[in-house]
Amino acid sequence: MSSQKISRRSFLKAAGMAGIGAGLMRGLPSFASAAFQDKIDMSLWWWADDPAYGKWVEDTAKKFGEQNAGITISTLQQDTCCVISQFTTAAAAGETPDVQFFFNGIYHIENVWQGYLEPLNDLIPEDVRKNSNASPLSVFDGKQYRLGWYPVPLLWEYNKDSFDKAKLDADNPPKTWDEWMAACDKLKTAGITPMGGGLSDGFWGEWYLGNALTQSLDSPGDAIALFIGDKDFTDPKYYAFWSRLEDMVKNKFLNDDMLSLDLFTAINKVTTGELAVTQVVGSVAASHIPTQGDRVGMMVMPVFGDGKLAGIPISDSQGWGIPSAAKHKKEAADVLQFMQSPERLNAFWEMHNFFPINSTWDPSVIKDKTLKQLYDTWVGGPTNVYIPDLMPTQFWTDAMFVAAQEIVGGSMTGEQAGEQNAGVVKQWRDNNPDLLENYQKWSEELAKAI
Image (cartoon, rainbow, N blue to C red):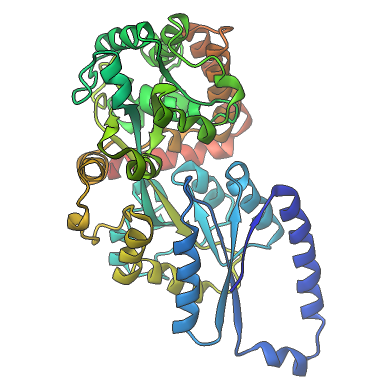
């Protein structure tokens, strides 16, 4: 077993060498290739939120090899920016790993539409697929393409010490937008930056959209309707979330260096008190508890919208799939099932003090009060799906990312962002009729499943 972390440049070089190596192997005489028949060298490409869960990944690969003589698994950790694009590039060339990490929803479903993922229905028993909690967003045309790994709660983390300094009730954070803006005023008066993060890489904007646009929706289908043109981003209801970001910018409630910082660098500013509040995912909030204890505050984004989904916690899941070009599909399916075994689920918790998403895992082992709040509210209770999982890739790059940066930079209003968003989705629809057809079919299936 081997492990390494690879950049996009190194990946492309390695992929080229892999192609050469495969060509050489095909050229070996039959007696030479026979020596390799009893030995299977598998590969696994992975990514995880910071802090990464490499210890569990390596241990899983090692133990699977120990329990399956003749099989070795090499692991490769990918960069945040390129985990999906690298896979798509490799899949187009037919040079994929046997097991691949995948984000939920559109991030892997677009690869399904291109024929790059293997359906798991005939490879993995139904109960294992269901219990893994990959969510309905991992299903297309009745076939499931991912198993779940760990949950991704989307929340606002706040520093209780900062709230105390501003004479706010740290145990009862703001629940409405008016309460939030009043709290920001008090924090700012106390010399504390109320809210912020890092937006240079775009992911803060994605999280913001996930937390905020959801408030204007009655169902996830409303988001799909916006992307396929049945609803309109120029409707004030559907650009209100951008206007709320504009409100925070105008009142100088965000950190001045937001555009020059990346997401994960800026997140830690909430633990130092440089920011009172920031957006996080559950794994990051959990990593702050060992040093911050019960001073880690967690809240749902304060409500401004009147959609039926407003105020409901949001959670997603990371997961694993099998590429269509995988050379060892049966063994890859065995690896995925091994990941869902009680021993591996418990090992994830014991190694990283964070929970797997599998519904058979027993959360009674969670003793820390703050960590239990995180699980009970954002994993074990009723939650919303993560709306950005539904957005077309072009919307991410040309609409969400651009609008978030320009609003924070002061060069775009919420209304202008609505117009810009509407223009991008129209362009996407006009240029991608085949994708639109698949998207509409997927939306119909999700409407029945969610």
